[in-house]
Image (cartoon, rainbow, N blue to C red; front, side, top):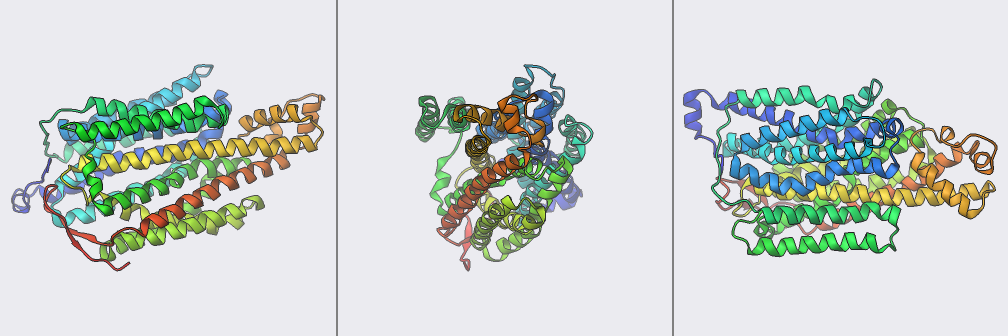
Length: 539
């Protein structure tokens, strides 16, 4: 395996093994913490960013989605570059790209160029994360001997997933000062990660193989085009030729990518890993779970600030219930993985998550945090049970591939799913919100055509307090909107119900997939080219 650690005897002789391992693991957790925090921290600040810069609702969704899409499009490339150029080098390069992009996101100028600026540098942020994360995981594996690797991986996946909780809390606090600080906070974290990486004296190994640039272009183009179609369906309409041209065209490019990868000598993605049934099921569970896991932060945050009239800090506390459930369950999920394998943890997590999201959606129209928090915690617990077991089991089951390649595959699946979830649920939210507000305005006396046009404008403008977003004056539109804040908040809550029902369905499908897992568990691994020894597991 690339980056194989020195034998334990050598490590003990030099006295460098334990401190290097601890420093390396700590450095990698600091590095990847930025990538996970940035998946959620922008969601809390979204209304403030939209209001100050005058972004459209779809534009703000693209600020969130550009990061996720870039992660998905470039993760496989990042994993491959890590193998070819060295894990430590790519981790440092990725960290620098990420933190420079973060600074530039925080320096976005006001005016018509603001939306383009943010989307561009959120995209380069995602590129930096895609270069960094596979290398970081490969470093953790390289410095730990096989007898300690499982525990290190469980800690890596468990803590990195839990760090997603820091985003909403940190975002709520920083937004009270300035939303720009949510990007600048990455600077000290990156400095710590880089310093610890240098101190850890991580060995560097490389593979002398060709980089598959054709594959990298194909997978990036296919993912970007398909997500563009899903994202723009709200504006273009589902009957639009452009919508389906993007979706079908993007998926067709991904089919071409698969065919090309099967023929090339040094593929970007080694699809042979999918011969392992357990790896395939792990990947499917992660795909459907991630449709809900990352998008929930954006939609729950905006729901809290619109329908519940919460401040960014209050919205962060609203999401804290989700993470309390997540944090507690992730510990149980790790123990189940060690004792019984991934299948029981995935089954429990998917079932609990599906029920939690369904019941959460049911309570949204009560407009009360008190009524919702148990179900938010239940939904978080479901994700907590399955995330680390599915991720760790997938990484441990690669067939004749490096950890960089396998991480590239699993993280590409996760982030592509999250990008699709943001796009599809965003389309649903926009459509249902517009429909509900149109009905409300018609009931208040506006003609259907004018009601629909106004509803679209209000739907775009809703960021916190709808009463303050309507036009002034005494015209028919202004009169219809005056005092309509409570009705619009309820309309938005009903639209979010549809989104959260969709998340429940995604977890239910993941549960069905988990039933097909063979139930075996990885018990040992010498290197990436050695067979995996498996033990039967109780389901």
